[in-house]
Amino acid sequence: MAFLWRDGKIEVDTMRQGRTLGNHTTFVINFTDSLTPYRMGDAGFTGSGFDQGGIISYQIESTLLKWSETDLQWLQEGFDEQLVISRLSVENTVTDKTGTGLQGFITNLTTSSSFEAHPVFKIQKTDESLPDDGAYMVFINILGFDETGETILYKPSVPFALTFHINAQAGFDKLALSEALKVTPEIELNDYNRMDALFDWAESQFIELFPHTAGSRFLFGYYARCYNNTVCLGSKDGKIYTTGGVFGGITEHGPINAFYESAGL
Image 1 (cartoon, rainbow, N blue to C red):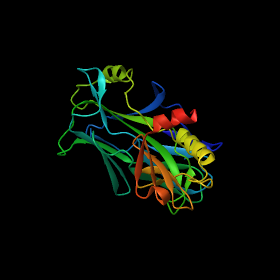
Image 2: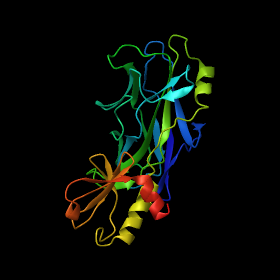
Image 3: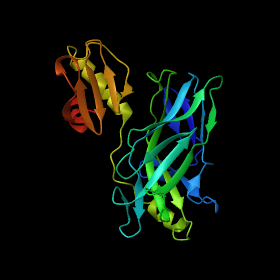
């Protein structure tokens, strides 16, 4: 999985290793080791042009999905498998209900603007028993922070998918996988560039609430901006929130799509 930092954005799949999945890219990770058919540590993240130092991370953008050969669709719930992503003794677990918004470490850039890192991916049932043969998918992005973790140095990439292929019991071959990848999951993903454009619009329209430009950052699962009047504006799970100042505590204002429409975005 190759990435390039260029002209203020992270470009995805610069080595053309991925496959097209509707409007997205997916990287297929085949669990082919006969000794560990449900675990893979060879699939790596590589990057170049990341010239600002800092920490490169991934962020999980969806819950785990499972392909149903019966329904010919990607299931978003109702199965027992989970994905565990490990890197340097830190684990993130993604199920059909949880995991969205979790961030994980990829590498710390010190003297080089390039990197190669190999997290370990494991599919198992929630009771740690063996998973079904088949295809599983999760959407993630990559991004980067300064050493404090507070400031975004590399804005989040467009979301892309990781598709995990298990055929340990010869029950789900490459043809079955190809059929699954003809179907795009029906999920809504964050568009951080569009969020930033919305926040820019809010700053231009409501100066009394958002009195100056501010950088976006992640706070407690929200993608947000905070201002010197203690007001914060953010988005989470497809909704807009404010907190602080005249708003008091955390206040929900409705779906972000409604605000996109108002802003002409």
